[in-house]
Length: 113
Image (cartoon, rainbow, N blue to C red; front, side, top):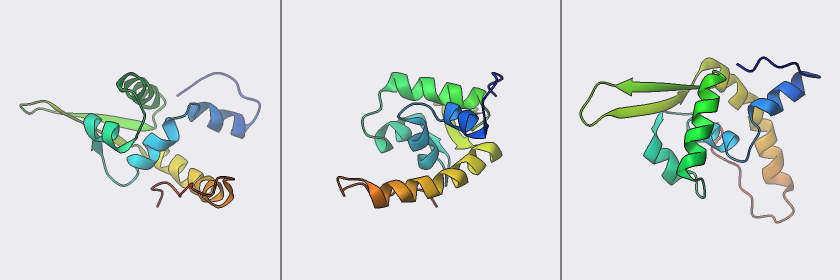
């Protein structure tokens, strides 16, 4: 978890989800764990480098759990931790607000449940 000092709770929360992709990663793994390749396919436009970087940051912040399976071929899955699930729940109203109020009218709600 980040240990820098924050002005308020909102400052801390925004710091955890900073960047274009983190909230989409959270939404994508909210219901079930996913493999790296699945995440790449399910999040259009994210580069392999950015996905890897964000997953590592989110793991360090205790939002995402990385689970390695002792199989051949190797298998790694990513899922939300309890902290990640609580952040996902907090993001649901923001997701709904964005879908309702986007000027272009073509924004749908993400996969939040």
